[in-house]
Length: 150
Ligand code: RB5
Image (cartoon, rainbow, N blue to C red; front, side):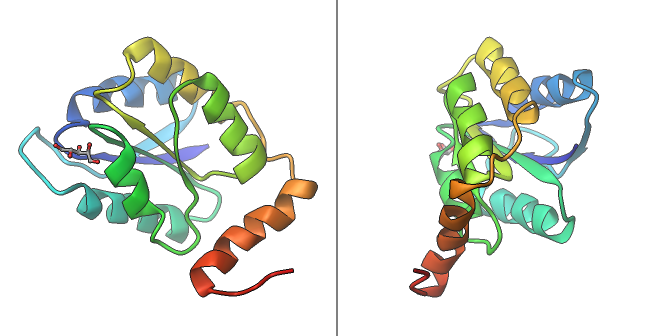
């Protein structure tokens, strides 16, 4: 799997640890910044990562801010992105299986390193189940179009 990662200043301290977790599982990770812990705006980095994931079909993203909330809300504004704010291995696995999530988000002020490791493992090792979930995932895109996909 190929991942793109970005954070804001409040997620910066977990970035290197997170990159190592991904690499240890044998996957590729591309760092989209920031390069230091100076104050930045999370929507700028959410957009950078979301655009990279959309442009590189089949790739995934990881976004970290203080809570994971602002950065996930921002990423979900980009068409084709399903960014999931996760808190544990269960939610990280379930969002791949049911929502076909393509960006994993979490909050540095919320989760510890052990949880990060377990979420990444769960996210990487779970495939989208398709079936009854496919129509629902299609309807997610319909929401932003205002379309009524019956
Ligand atoms: C930054 O202080 C903080 O607001 C941000 O990282 C994030 O938690 C927003 O949702």
